[in-house]
Amino acid sequence: MELVFSREVKEAREAKKPIVALESTLVAHGLPYPDNHGIALELEAVVREHGAIPAHIAILDGKACIGLELEQLEQIAKLGRDLAKAGATDLAVHLARGTSAATTVSATSVLAAKASIRVFATGGIGGVHRGDTGDVSHDLVTLSRTKIAVVSAGAKAILDLARTMEMLETLGVLVIGFGTDELPAFYTPRSEIELEHRVDNVKDLAKILQTHWEELDGQGVLVANPIPADAALDPQMIDRAIQTALGDAETRGITGKRLTPYLLQRLAAVTGGASIKANRALALHDAKIAAQLAVQLIV
Ligand code: PSU
Ligand code: MN
Image (cartoon, rainbow, N blue to C red; front, side, top):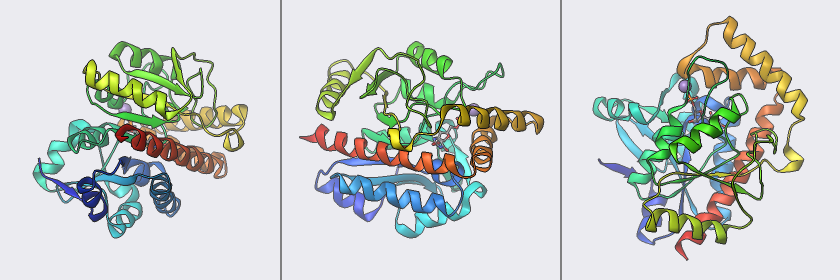
């Protein structure tokens, strides 16, 4: 497959600099304009500040873009939900037809791995939705078969976190708490779901990843990195807001691909923007740890 690299990523590859993948669905479908554009630029800045090169990933006119030029990123932020949302399964359709799409965690992971990028920062992965609809994000399956470390604040709190954790275990996705013994709950640091493994620094983490990938042919790893305490939302407040958003989605019959973006948008409205502020803080924290990890992996 032909990969199109941004100027900065092309140079980084030639100089063998560490690179961190970033997803475009968070930009197009997870956050409203113009916050999405500002946050995407901040994510890139944090990655650079910590010694790595950012590579936002998307499909533009049938090209798998690894790293986006400024105007491309802005275009994606402005298009928002008018842009298609592609999971890993949808990639071939866009590539073959020459169409454009924002890439989810699953699609971003697949394309990053094709570009030999091993570290990816995002807010929260998809997972098992609440209730009994059987809606389970393809992110989980992709992680089970793609060599990538996704640094995220766990899975989004709108999900059933306990079942998401069980599914990760079933699929053999290694989950490692970064400075925590519990799966983070996205907007809050704690879920009371205990993790089997914890690290407290990127050096320790890098060693585990190298062993996992190089000696055992292990695949995806979820690095569960809690939201910084000072940015966390009140657990009861966000729980109530999630209940409201879930109720609204049910009333309006929203399912499938539109569900996650709809819930995030409702949460932003119900919390008066507090969920967006928290999302920004946790994603920036993920970008920082991911950059430090990417640096550590090549030393
Ligand atoms: N995390 C966020 N915001 C998002 C997403 C994750 O903070 O918008 C996106 C990711 O792209 C993830 C997708 O892969 O939501 C999951 O969608 P679904 O539940 O339809 O699989
Ligand atoms: Mn789904």
